[in-house]
Every structure is written in C-alpha cells, then in structure tokens.
Length: 181
Image 1 (cartoon, rainbow, N blue to C red):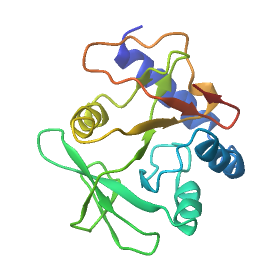
Image 2: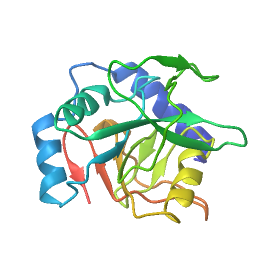
Image 3: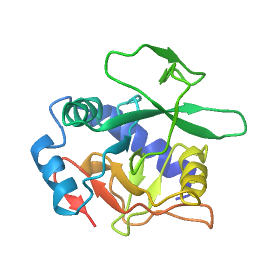
C-alpha cells in the first residue's frame, strides 16, 4: 500500500475505534519525561482533531507542573511555527478546522508532541500528507535539539511505513499501551 492508501485506511479505523476512555496514562507519561531526562520545560503540543488521541489533558497537567506550552499555527507554503498558549487563552480556527493560538510570541519547544495517522516499530510516522511537521522538525533542528514524541492509539501501528528522504523519524512513540524507543 502507498502512503495515501495507508492514511485512508487508518483514519477510517481510528474513527471506528475511537473511544474517549482510551487515554495515555498521565502518571506514566510524566514519569517517562523525567526518567529519560526529558525534564525540559518547553513543550510543543497540538490541538486534537479527527479522532486523534486527546493531548489536551497532557498539556493541562504539564502546564500545572510549570511547563511552558505552545501550539502550532499553520503558515503559507506548508510551514508552521509554535506559539505560546495556555489553557484559558483564546483560539482561532484555521483553514483545516483546527484551533490555533492567537498569540504572536514564537516559541521553540524542547519537546515536540507530534500527531500521527500511523507508525511503525522503527519510529517512523505517517502524517496527513502536508509535510508540516517534517518541515518544522527540519527547521527547528537547525536552531536547537528537540525531542520528538509521537502520540497515537496502539491500533495505529502498522508493520512498515513507506518513507522518503523528507520524512523525519520520531524519538519516541507513546500509546495507551506502551512507549516505543
């Protein structure tokens, strides 16, 4: 199967199997950040849509633990940047129907939480096909080291993701069942 076929198949499965009770264990996630010395305080998240795992509860907890949280804003030419955001800050809806911060303060996360459609055991990720995260990772890694953590449901795992030279590998993938390294 090509990327487009995999994407369509997994999105349908995710919609069918989506269950709000399937969550990443917050305690284990925070412990994982500390165990792996990822106790960095600047985190880039995302606003969940299209039956993605709910990262807002994670961001809320991390903000209460004094993490500085940011969300992406989509720009022209398939680019994006991260901007400071707090749970009570207003959001605007982008062209994809995804809420974005209204902040103008660009933020460079130490830890980047990455949404994905599918993943494999080699820490490859398949996104929605726009290349936003791959371009952003390419850009930020020229500025600083960033730890890339994909968030997904365990049923989004497939045997192998077809990759090309533009695809960026993740450092970890966290599901409701496991943490892949």
